[in-house]
Length: 355
Image (cartoon, rainbow, N blue to C red; front, side):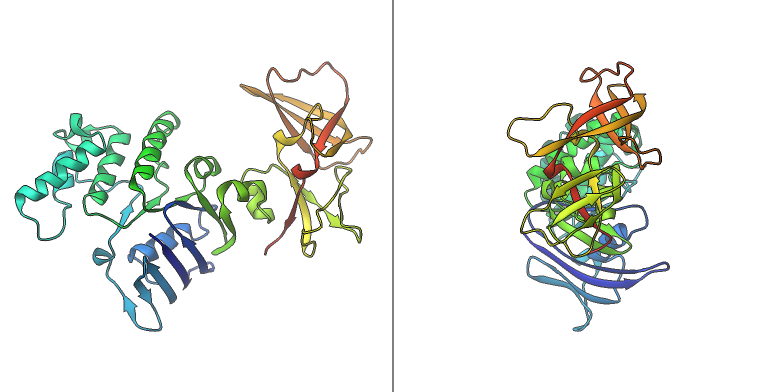
């Protein structure tokens, strides 16, 4: 299964212009609220129309502005899971699923299809309860069952956990992960949560202001987000201005840190650098390239299971904070005002404003 999206649409505050491809597995659109993620999903589903472009699902053209093709939503064979699940509160779980079966099937076949998906999504124990009487996770599975009973070729998930509290979100996410893996087709997940995206996705496209800044396998993008916005969205808390000299040395004056960039690194356009808080080390790991730097300890914050240490370049009175996060039992502040930490070369990420 494959999805190709190349569309443009004028919105109130900016123009949406996205181009990406997705295959089997989970592809996430990661971005801040209002960057165009949900509108992209709506265009794929057919509930919104791009101004121009093309959308192709497994070789079938769903939208083509030049050829005047715009397949209606009900004929696209896409499953759109809305944030509120859109269940009928006056129907049971079984009735919600049964009424969603499309096509010219007889009553017996519709019941068989419904029972099959109920069993597959572990809804047997609640199938005769009203949809308003079941848990958030069960509601989500019911909404997914309504999509899957029609043999949807693709599932579109728009912030599927936003309405759930933290405890329930964790349980529902685990359930959804198993369902998506069983689906074995294309899933597009929209989220502003880097943690959700990292845990659930095979690939990720980072969106900013209606554009996709960087895309690729999820672990590669998180390891090298490439842009300042991409770094922020993937959880990089330490970002500072940087320059590259003629010897391919990346300099971060605010932190007193420098590193040599690999030969294959494109150096043009680099204006900043990022370091994840937990990539700093009190000791040098075996076989890791890098060097120790001295830092002033400005402040130590005790978290539930960790400590966050605010650092400054040694001897610099006016500094841009560099944060180090360490497990609660991994380091204890003994009152000293200075510390030497190891900074791995590959932990220092060169960043651009855009690509």
